[in-house]
Length: 456
Image 1 (cartoon, rainbow, N blue to C red):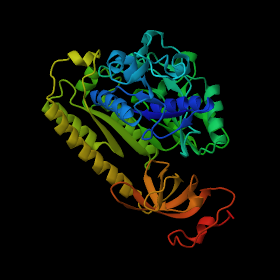
Image 2: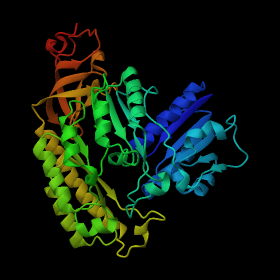
Image 3: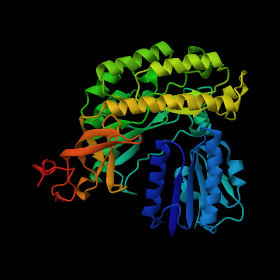
Image 4: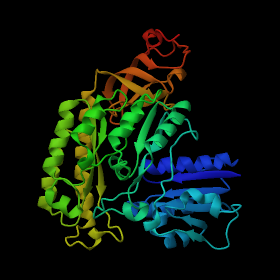
């Protein structure tokens, strides 16, 4: 039988989908692209915004057009939060909640279409299992996602994640290390630590995120460790020093801000002030001037008047960060902010979002241009596009280099060139990590013979 998968949302969802794919492969299924006909379709959903809900419904309908006789199972956050709506979509056979999503084979039987959709969604208060997940073994990616934490105890006013994933819980350090070693054995060079709130790692087991980083830092074969995102109030000076003091942990921070005003931060139930955030960013920048720093921002939260937005805009504009992820506020059912006064008209939300996205583009361009002329390590990925390969630097600058098969899944030292608006052009000058045999091809003039010195 053939199985296809579609993932919406965050890196954590991708790690969990990869684990589901492994379950199917171990039971003899062929994994095929979602665009191809299959016998089983698994859709892993997100529910951060109303748009994510809408897209999930569209994906279900797309699955039915491609594979009208397929057994369709919908899992993930949207499945936990609104299973009845999903079950009402024509063609859906099964809906699995947070505690049930890794037990597809317990509920699906022989994967023959049900006469009526079945819903297996327990109360989120009982969701205390972890559900280990890591990507790898399904495709040829050079970077793997490793789930180290799940759930959240913060209860921000706009967020559905605690409702969809439950309380904060973590995998043991020993299990994380074991899975990381497995990923190294599979050939992965970079491991991305994922979770809902990774900085909260281990707090209920008297362990810490610093201890996890230190343990993973000692795993032979890991060349890079990247942290997907971390809350600002959990990013202590001790953690920053450990982070930057490691030769493996990337100089790349993704730190949600959400608003540049204290008034909105209080309404959002965030756990820091703009002054704290400002000092945090400048502390990182002073210790690592070349660090990549990404910021999440929500625009159009209730009560964000024109004057408050301008204050937030100015605060963000002055931050020495590398890029922005701008989200337009979306009312989510059963969250406190749904009932807040001062609702912002959608057209104003979108206009303000567009303004901040321009700032984000300017910051991204300036940061990429500041890397021009530097020679930086780039982990080259295997996807070929326009006869080039691309990869990311330690500080999260995307770089393209001319294609050569021996460069796939190696760390190459590249001279950073012009920023094109999407990536920086690069010239490989040496190879930091490579297979034991590399055969150069003179048909690629931009790569000098120095690339292969000491490798043959």
